Structure formats: C-alpha cells, structure tokens
Length: 183
Length: 281
Image (cartoon, rainbow over the protein chains, first blue to last red):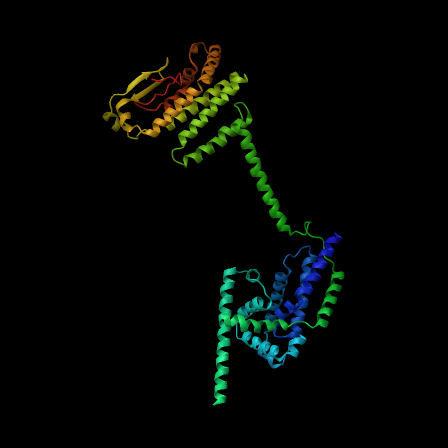
C-alpha cells in the first residue's frame, strides 16, 4: 500500500510540474488577475489532492485539473465579476518570461493576442487558448466541455475565422492610417 | 487559414509566455508537498488503483458471461440427452421449441427442421434400444414423441387445408380411401386429380426426403416394432399381433395426432406409409 501512496504522490507532483503553468494561464486569461490566478491554481491542486485522498485515482491529470480550475473560476465569477482584459493591459502587465522582456516584438504580439482574445466571447476564448496555446486535442477539449468532437471542431473553426477577420480588419486599418500619414 | 497558420498562430503562441515565476512555482509546490504529508491519500476503494465503478462494470460483464456460458453449457449438454434423462426436457421443451420458433421466421425451412427432429427422435430410440434402456416406462414416451414428431413433420410437408373446405370439396373428384392398417384410424386420403394440379416441386421433394429418411431408419423402426410388440403383448392382450405404428394409432392421443398428421397427399407422389415407413403405394 505504501507503493500506492508513493505512486499517488509522485503522480501528483509530476502533474504539478507539468501543468501548473497551464492551469495558471487558464485562470489568468479568465480572471485577468495574476494574483487571483495564482490562488486559483493552488486551490485547483489542493482540490485535486483532496480527491485522491478519498481513495480515487486520476487517469487524465490535465483534463481533470482543467475541470477543477474551471469550476473554481466559475465559483469566483459568481462572487465577483471579472475585469476585462483591457484593464490588464492598461495596468501594463508583462509576461513573466525573460524572453518577453528582452524581445519587444514578442511583447507586442502578446499584447495584440490579448486584445484579439478580448474581442471573443468567453467560450470562444477558452477554445482558442486550449487549442493554440495549451495544445489540447479536439478530443480533450470535447471531454472538458462535455461535448462532441464535431461540435468543438465547428466552434473552433468559427472562432478562428472570427480572429482571422479581426486581424485583417486591423491590418487594413493600419494600412489606411499609414496612407493617410503619407498624404 | 493560411493567414491564421502563419501570423495568428504566432500571436497565440506568445500567450504561452504567461507563466508563474520560478520562485512562485517553487513556493506553491513546497506548500502542496507539505499538505501531502499532513493529509496523506487514503487507500483506494478497490485495489489496483481502479475506480469502483470500473470494477462494478467488470463484475457485471463477468456475471453476464457466466449466465450465458452456463446457459450455452446446459444447452450443449442437453443436445445429447436421451429420453429418461433430466436434460431431455431441456432439449425437447426449451431448446427445440426455440429452434422451431426461429425457423418459423424463415420461409420453407420448417419442414426440414421437423424432419431433422424426427431423425433425432429415431436416433434416440435406436440408442436406447442398443443400450437396452428402453424400459416400459420409457416405451410410451418414446412412442409418443415419435408419433408427435411424425405428425409435425408430415404436417410440414403439405400445404394447410383451405378454411372453406366444404366449398372446395364439390369441385374435387371423389377421394380414394386406402386402408393401410388393421384399425380404421389408419387411413390415407389420396385426391388424385387435385394433386396433379397443385403439386409443386418443393412439396414433392419434401415428401420424398421424408420417405427416404424413413427408409434410412427402417432398421430402427423394425426393431422398435418388435420391441413395442413384445411390450404390448405383455400389457394388453387386445393389441396382440399389432405392429408398433398401429399400436401408436390405437392410443387415443396418438390417434388424434395421427389423424392430424395425415395429409392429403398429391397423386403421383409417393404416399406416406403408416405401418411401414418405406412402403410405397
């Protein structure tokens, strides 16, 4: 039985090392609050451990942690409505990685990505982040949302199309501004 | 989509730079590890790290397999059962009626099925005779089973009689009655002209098959007749000298079935012998 406990602990610690950042990001994009995201991430792992304390085992840690984090965020939303991502940008949040600080291009892309995300509704935002930031498969997303893979694919396609259109509009606007300045 | 693949994908990947600081990550990890020590995980509900419902599913599947397996086992064992054995009832009262019901859903196979059952009944009788297990008690039941099965098999070799029999009879020529045995119950009506019009190849084949089958089992039937004759002699003095089939037809129940089993056979086709199955008209 000691082996079992060790295995459980090892699996839990391994899951933390692998998914702590992803869960933090998930909470952060949903709450726009770095400290809150950190707390929610920690609570997510505490709840996960509490689940294993009941003698239950976890097979898919990533999906399981996302589910717990999602529920915690929903609970938090019920207590307090989140600020928009714009507020975050106004506050001048910068990514934690040193690369981003050193590369202004990366920071600009990051800010633009946040702005684009902010123009999507919450469901589409989750889909885009899960698929293109966290690299979750369609099936994993479908399991998380309790929907069929086809439905997720269709929704993802629509969200992608929306983002593409937003980028095109933005580029067209920038081009017009540049032409205006030239004139 | 090309635009997305190149530019937007890169934009979204930049979001991955959002992460915990190394210090924060380590601090939270230490807190969690402390929590692990304070609140160790309990034993799993059912061993092997399995969820209890997974095991419940396996138990359920196991139970289904057991039930099906035992059912198939009993059914297979019953296949070789002989009259007088307890599994014989499983064979004749459960398995064969199910087979009959299944066969009825498919066209033109009932006769074959009934003939195969008759074949079985005769084989069983042969086996009992060979082993000298045909006791007085079994004799009646074997006799009855063969009689019943013969009636069923014969009934399948002819088309059902029209419901309005009276309306049809006047158009037909007078039927010929053939006395085939000592007792009046053993008669066969052969409608010569009607048969020539209505006879079909499949019916002819079915009847021919039946006669061939009876010929094939002539030895068994002869032995049965001898055995039944002896038993009848000892039981009932009135039945002295009667052949087995005749003895069967004297039984009120058998006679009724025998009459049911007597079809209007087509002319030109081999008739159904009663006393001697291989006897041709």
